[in-house]
Length: 109
Image 1 (cartoon, rainbow, N blue to C red):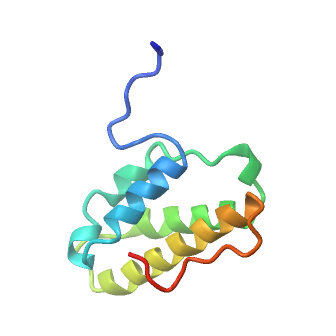
Image 2: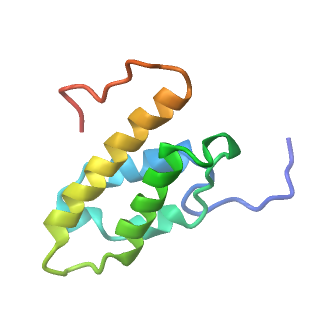
């Protein structure tokens, strides 16, 4: 199946890019930040999530990652914030999809 859309370098979509960021932020703080911003380049919020908590959390995620300066004194604090936002975002997506008891679980990366 041929498409006219060129291949994406860092991923294109919503869940695809959230997954890439989850993997990135499973690394230690000193490794997680480098290149993380690239995964937001083609992150697309699906229309069904507009005006929801998912959109709010996606905006927060963008702000934290895009405004971060690698090597700054708040690396670890902001790293923890980004991980927390990613976990909240994943649960919010499940809730919007109809899973009322979604939970990140006790053991997760």
